[in-house]
Amino acid sequence: MLSIAIDSGPLSGGHSVRGIGVMVKEQIQAIKRLSDQAIKLETFDFAANHQSLITNHYDIVHYPYFFPYALTLPSRKYGEKMVVTIQDLIQLIYPNNYPPGIRGKLNFYKQRIRLKNVDAVITISETSKKDIVRFLGIPAEKIHVIYLAPTSFYKVINDKEKLKDVRRKYNLPSKFVFYLGDVNYNKNIPTLIKACEIAGLPLAIGGKHATEVGSGEISLKAVKGPRDWIRFILGKPHPETAHFRELEKLFSNNKNIIRTGYIPDEDIAAVFNCATVCCQPSFYEGFGLSVVNSFACGVPVVIAKTQALVEIADGAALVADPNDGTDFADKISSLINNPALRGQTIKKGFERVKFFSWEKTAREMIDLYKKVTNDM
Image (cartoon, rainbow, N blue to C red; front, side, top):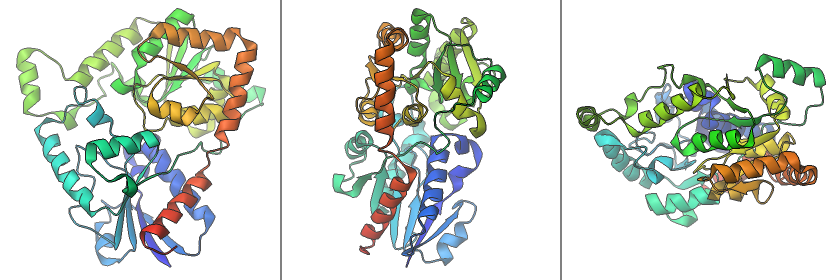
């Protein structure tokens, strides 16, 4: 029997309600549901229970997240085999917007050395796999693509009272475009705002991050360093600070933007069901969970023409130029004004989402564990 330890650290703190937290939670639960008798799974916070990694001799120790500029990997190898999940490398793809600073560069150097201890890498799209090969120099045969999936509560909701209550609770109009997620630079929110203005539709942005813009709650302490003193002297803000200042102006000048804040699990599927169109305008994504969540809820989707989103949607969404708000507006409007196209797009979404499930994800993870330990 294989003994496997997975770091459950992302299930607490800020990551718990973001993509990493959702991914780790669903993966762990799905592996447990499969009840594979060939493995014994233990999940705990590695940082808080470091001694367990030392005293227990695990066959596999799995680190389910990786950041290039922070020391998320250990300096030594615990367990017989080591697996790491790398969702994406956004910081390396947009270095001007996510500058590492001196400390970040040093951490990245250490992270690359520590990656040599890794026996297998899991990533969430073919797009991310190519980026990992390109930026980290890891051999392609060592990287395994295992897709994510929509959580089971994402589905079509026919309860009109539930939908009515959710509309009232989050101040949602009868027609609106919905975006769920963070609002960092790579999410390309300014283009989506412009598109909704052109299309004449309100935009609802779900998630806590958008409500933090302009409130003083967004902190960039992790990237502060000597370079920031130079920026201060020159009167130039950190790139992400400049981005958030732009968003603050856009939010304050547009009354048709609704920032819902954090939406709990019991409401989120209903909000998707209330949406007229869902959009994912990102310049870059590792996967794009909102796309498959929208498919499961029967909502038509417009995505940016970026590799991972096109890969995941696989023809089930309309595709727009991420740099062209008018193109996005045209695609959004076509899904409203053309009932036949709307119906076809929704149907394609239902078909595409059948390809994804957390049980499938868990089975592929277990198969990889067995392969890594030559136990297949």
